[in-house]
Image 1 (tube, rainbow, N blue to C red):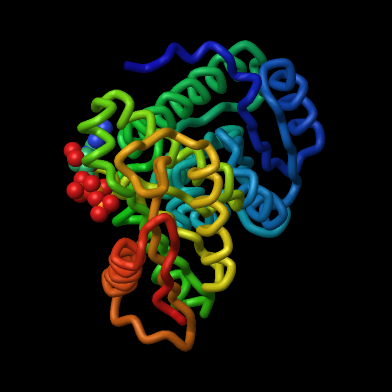
Image 2: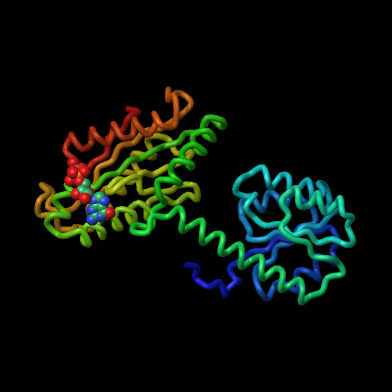
Length: 307
Ligand SMILES: Nc1nc2c(ncn2[C@@H]2O[C@H](COP(=O)(O)OP(=O)(O)OP(=O)(O)O)[C@@H](O)[C@H]2O)c(=O)[nH]1
């Protein structure tokens, strides 16, 4: 099931260590294998980790500012950074201190003085595990045919982004997309060609959503949903218009469509501080209602719920 993990040079290891000498030794041992970024203090390191999402953290026990234990607790609070394995680099810590490390999510220890070969092999093993875990997560959340994310991930991302939008008073736009006259397309050109059309929907979407948090999910058979966090209604409408145009401009022959080519319709709904959505589900329902309007108002177009 796994592709064998052989290349580690696209991995990043963050070292958080207040001793410049230990930092130097760790970096020198690892930087032939992967990218290494070193910090003396935990606060700056945490800011970097939240943005860069490295593959492994080598954590000192005492650091400038927060302790290694405090830094781990901070990383555990965020479900995304909590997934990054942490290895403590320590000299003779007591049993109860080791317990504290396990309690805050450490996956291993490396003892000082550093033995280069042990360090390299341990780091290699943890990086391989991390890559395999990432692959597995991806397989379980990605639709095999279209490579969009699947419905299961959509439900959890929707809830997460909806809560985030409410808390931060940001906008959250939801776009429902559906292929027009798709039953007729399948009947005329066959299921395999139909599958290619679905792949093309995702390609069109992916070429127009660029922010790291934007994502497209396969919602059902020929229906897709896009989540655009921190994206106001007008921008979501513009992006959707571009996606619809990009898809149509591929000129995929469809002789049973009045447009002669395959097309998609879309509905947009946006949560913002002024809108009245009781739940994330009601936001999706609004986008779905807008999609229904687009379908019944001629197709190959977008309708919005927040006009
Ligand atoms: N090729 C292919 N077809 C699929 C897949 N999943 C669903 N479908 C087909 O999508 C079609 C959806 O048909 P309808 O719901 O009637 O929608 P439609 O024909 O597009 O009609 P409108 O949406 O009103 O334009 C059905 O024929 C399904 O078999 C898939 O994975 N691959």
